[in-house]
Length: 103
Image (tube, rainbow, N blue to C red; front, top):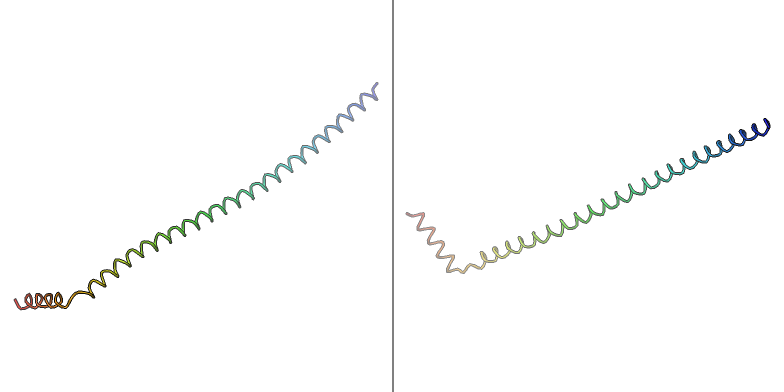
């Protein structure tokens, strides 16, 4: 009976060691999987941030181009208006300036 008890204890110890080894291996696998997922998530977040930043830059450039186009068109109109001033208006303006200078 003592031999059976010793064998039973030995079997229990062996099973305990197997359980510990299995648990250690599972914990290593869990840690490895967590590290892999962490790296993947980090890459995904960085890629998403880069994409968002690129979109924001593109939108800002597009808006800037639209605004500069409006300003340029306005300036071109003003330039054309100045160039197209009739000689009569130019003559009146010159006379008005001369009158003010003489006074």
